Amino acid sequence: MMIDLRIERISVIGNAAIETKIFLDAIPTRNCETNIKKMCISIGGSGAYVAGALRVLGLEVNIITQLGNDSYGKHVLSALRRTAVDLGYVLLSSSLTSSFISIFDKDFNRIFLLRSVKWNEKITLQRLVNALQHSDLLMLCPTTRSITMEAAKLCKTSAKLLAISPEAAFIGQPQKWIDKLFKFADFLFLNESELCHYTNSPNLKKALERMAIENDQIVVVTRGRKGCMVISREGIISEKGEAGEVIDPTGAGSLFLASFIWSLANNHNLREASRIGCLGGYAACTSEKFTEKLVALKKTLIRL
Image (cartoon, rainbow, N blue to C red):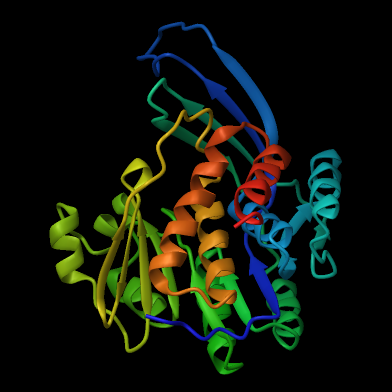
């Protein structure tokens, strides 16, 4: 299936943060001690990863996010500035910058701890309105529930393309709210576990049966090493994943997403976009830090 996307500029809305990653052999049980194998502090947040990845692949990108006017915020801004992402819509506030702690075991199962930013919803949505005037597509990563829904509505009112990557942020929200949000999406990105949760399904087969496709909507399901599935009104495309050593899977979903959209913006069909998405997702797994992952992504895809 060929997708004719006329994309010159993309707006990304989502978190940009500092992430502390801790790697262990096993997650300890209660009241137990364990040795840390290694630890890494880097830029985090799906908004930062998606915006940075789209930009290093050559697309014009702005990011709508909120940072604290603190040392963490300055560090995040500096990293994004080096990618040449348009930072004109970033809100610096008196609140603290978001931060994450990710604890991985040897199989990269993760415990995720979050200190979230207190979003100024009014200013965020005002900046989104301004950004959409100059954008062709909105990439909607998790923020707050109300910003997410209002951003989706604003995007469709503006007749712009909308890609939604809710991750696990809204698991547990009312099903009617989830269904309403997903109907706005032209592109919906979920991993296998998220798809099962959002469709209230016990397994992937049942989730695919329950996943309703709206008109020309495209749903992309990432499956880690197993690859991905792309669901459209023309059927299901399955693509194998990339084999190789995984150093750190952080950002794999975001870099898959950016690579998939970049491929479609270059007039590739859905099968080719699936292959390129898997290449981009694996590139994220080959290093630990934000900048290094973006360098690996560029080296992997720009040569294609």
